Length: 236
Image 1: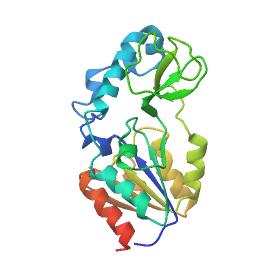
Image 2: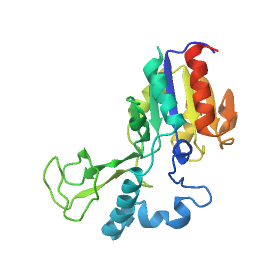
Image 3: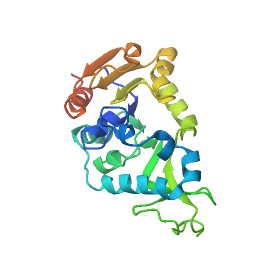
Image 4: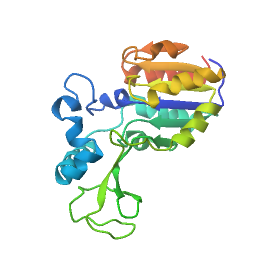
């Protein structure tokens, strides 16, 4: 295992599934119980703000019932103990990476534990339910908060910064992703086109973009991610 200077790790729903958070596309997943059009679009929020808020309030509460798993803890260990710069780009809106100890985390699809104000545009830490009368901590406007989550039809966050990170990395690792959601699904091909980074897929099963990776390992994230991190740290 060679030494790397810039490690970029993309994580998806699969890494949090072992903590008990429902994935979107699997059997019994979130979208079997709720239509995207009803809870995850700007149009749904405009049509039924209270119903959409209730959906995300329940998901926010559920975060307090789960804990980071061995895969989250292993990535935090990698950041803490490695000589490399380690950045996690996550498609997940949970806070399990941070609770495991990771500090350098980009949430490209937003965060459940934040609320964004439609009046001033600021995103603020938010632990409780968002009520119709909730006031923005930044500007004080009441009734103007929405979940700080990127809905279908909206542009993901931090894309310029992500583009720079992908261009600079010499190791790109994808963990627990379906390879079907863009733009994240295109990150590995973007990295491969530059020709300077090693690419690795760690997943329960091959993703839709598995053929783009130099190396792949399959199995539960809580098993294969700690083993991979151990190899990176020990050079074996």
